[in-house]
Amino acid sequence: MRYVISGAAGFIGSHICDRLISSGHQVLAFDNLITGHRENIAHLLKNSRFEFREQDVCEAFEIAGSVDRVFHLASLASPVDYLEHPIETLESGSTATRNMLEIALRHNARFLLTSTSECYGDPLEHPQRETYWGNVNPVGLRSCYDESKRYAEALTMAYHRVHGVKTNIARIFNTYGPRMALNDGRVVPAFIDQALRGVNLTVFGDGSQTRSFCYVSDMVEGLLRLSECDEIYPVNLGNPTELTILGFAELIRKRFDDAVGIDFLPLPSDDPKVRRPDITKARTILGWEPRVPLDEGLTQTIDSFKTRVAPVTTLAWTAAESSPDRVR
Image (cartoon, rainbow, N blue to C red; front, side, top):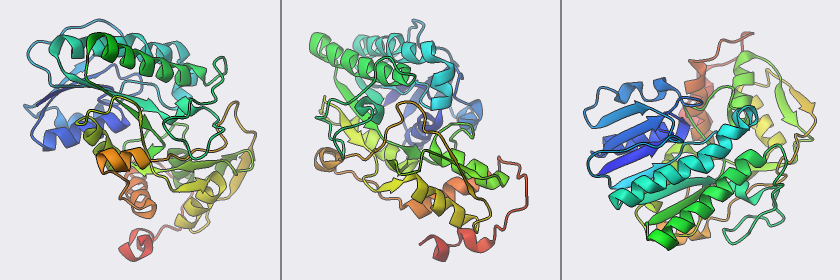
C-alpha cells in the first residue's frame, strides 16, 4: 500500500516509516523539520519506496497517484517545543489536520490521527478511559497543545460524519525510545540526558506525580493495528504500568550507580498529577498491549543516547549495566 505520513522525520513518525518500508509498503513522507530531524530518516532516503518532501502540511498541497492510508503525526508534542511555538502548535492541530483529511477524502484513503493523553488534562478520573471528557485549562500555557489535539479529534469526527472518511483516532500516552530529542522536555530523555552528562536529575514538585511509559516499537504496533480496524472513536495506546516521577528518577540513578543526585524544582503550570491509560478497549478490539519491559526499553534508549551526549564527568558505567542479566 501507499502511505502518506506527516511528521515523518519525528520520533514516532520515523519509526513508523521504518516499519512500513520493512513491510514492503510505499511511503510519501512530509515534515517541515521544525522539530523533526532529517537524520531520523536518512537511512531511508535511498530506498525507492520512500519519498521525502520537506514541507509544512499547514500549507495546501496535492499528491499525484493513489493513496491508501493517511497518517497525521505532525505536531509539536514536547513542552519545550509547544511553549516556544504555540501558534504553530495550534495550526498543526487545525489547518494541518484539515489538509491531511482533505488528502484522505480526495483519494478515498483511510485516515489516522495521532492524538494525545493530554486531551484528559489534569484528570479527575484515574486511570483514564476513552469515555472521560477531560479536565483541561483552555487558556493555560499548555492549552496550545491540549486544545489543538481536542480540535483535531473533533475535526476528524466531522469529516467522518459529513464526508464518510474512514477515520481512526489514537490517544497516545507517554512513549519513549531511540530518536527522542535530547532537549525534548519530557521526563525520559531529560533524565537520561542529565545522567549521561553527570548532572543531577531535575524533578518538578515532590515527584509524586505519575506517568506510564510505552516503548516506541509497541506504540508503532498499536498504531498500525488501529489503522486497519473500523473503530472511529478514540482508542488509548500506552502502558498501564504507572510510576511516580521520583520512582522513575531513582530507577535511572541506579542505572548509573547513583552517580548523580536529584534537584527538586517548582511544579510547572497545569502539569498533570496522574497519567495512566485504561487500555481495555485496545486489548479488546486490537488484541494489543505493550510487550517491551521498561528495563529492556531503557537499555535500548540509553545506548542510543550514549552516542549523542558528551559527558561532563566520567560516570561509573560498566558492561554489566546493559547486560541481559542486569536488564531482566
